[in-house]
Length: 428
Image (cartoon, rainbow, N blue to C red; front, side, top):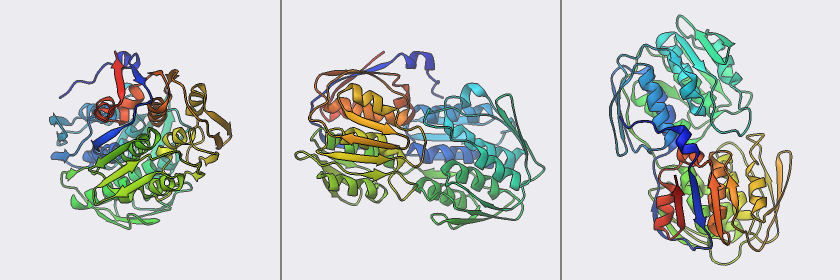
């Protein structure tokens, strides 16, 4: 198995960008990080050889693979875009801090561990610093299914003889909460009804994959999911669909540089909300069955937006869109409703000459004629992407530090942008 790189070394890496280069050409989208991580966690529910293709080789995937091996799984293959993992001997129920602290999605092993082993000891997760994102929705749901949960010294301890079906309402729509409880319910005794669930494509995909393994899940993609518990699941075999957030990021990259980029291996219907906003701004977007061409032809206009759970505007594209709006004509108002601390990139954009005022959950962006290159500091995964986009369009050189955030979610970003004409390189 590919070794996990030293995070200490990666924290020192920088990305250097010489801006004002028009992007042009064709770019292929990798598999969806936010789809593969819950599917990997679902492997815990099975006993046998699981096979996944279309896997993006990003840091979070490597971390999750290490975690599954730590739990007793055995990696048979991790080459190119394929993972094969034997889960027959999973018997360890502890997800330790040194792995979980680097990745929010590691909390997804909590439900599967309780469902399979009846025990779980999972460190409170880390990941991006974009808000509290508490796990109380997960914990209350598992308690409703009969689990005894306690928090002690930074760990979640859970135990149960066998999870029981229940009816549970999410006070707030939660993607990871929905996935966690859905996975747990597949092996619970009886029927579980989950209300006000997340409808993101990644959640629907997870439900469909589990059904192919013998689960009985109905209602995915709607507000209410019904799960009939079964005694066992067959191993997983699936292919991960293209990453909609990566798709959106490169759509905005083409727009902000006045580029002409054809993005292939994507699902246009999954980025419809972004497409509408780009067209409102005056960007040309041409859609085909599995590709999107984006042309940044001339100046664009300010557009207001509000982030919302799917099918609304994705919070994971808010920072990138804000970078675009810094160069738009007029004023844009961006309302963030999903995470309470997701405007940390605004201060860095202002250091490049942007004019952004943040008050609470609202950012007011007054467009400027140009951005200037500057030393920049990434604070989270999507903020990192927004700084890269701004640097591509800025005059002069930008140096972005703490780029390990980018490695968590974007596969080969520098290489993909370089092939489109960007002057971008990594300094170790």
